[in-house]
Length: 348
Image (cartoon, rainbow, N blue to C red):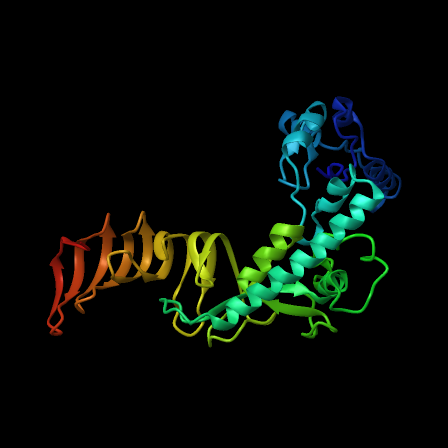
């Protein structure tokens, strides 16, 4: 916690006698007025107004720069333990797994272990690339494509380690450090502008299975997930996305995150389950087969929204636990509209 001193004032903060003192500037001004006032008549020196008890209580506290709360001096230590400023994702320290693994190994054992790792990691990456080249595109209600961004600086170290890149003294006797995307960020935590794509430049694009492999083996980050609405492997300039959970067929399956398609408006902000909207705000597919736009709670429309059922029926209005309540709009598959009448239609 970073604690700033209290605001500047003419009085000594926390000093109850300060209210009885006269400000020097006020005293000098009053004396000048008394010596040379209009018409030569002196004016009585006017003392500063005393602080009230509430003002003394307020100014005696110290303001916390994290939460803005004013804390008593004797409570600063306790408040500091509870109010902690979380570091930016690009400034978090990462655990180097090699330091732990090599601590109990002799030099010959380390060399044998490194040889095994180089061989296995290269074989695993080659298999992932081969599987990705054979994978068929799976249809989903978000037609775009997801991908991760990794620093080319780190990727060059890994390529050097497994023997497909330029040799490096750093990876000769040890594997690369945890994934480090910090060189893609400015000091304020925003992504730097003007970065170029390519292994020999600034960043490289990765499919989700490849990122998961590197993340599992090396750790580190932060993760830079992107979404491309046209279906191409996303680049750094594409739509930022977040997701934590299980993936299937190169797309989010069950977990929480946020992503929206700029073209169709489909997406979610919250939790999906089994590839369907679960507890979130979004526009997409429900487990019932209906397309819904609005708030979803436990897989059911809940709040203002619009539902399109598999048979073409459309419902608009306020939903509650999957049912349309109150005044709403109902359009059947033939296009016949019922508007303004109380509706109690279920999504089932």
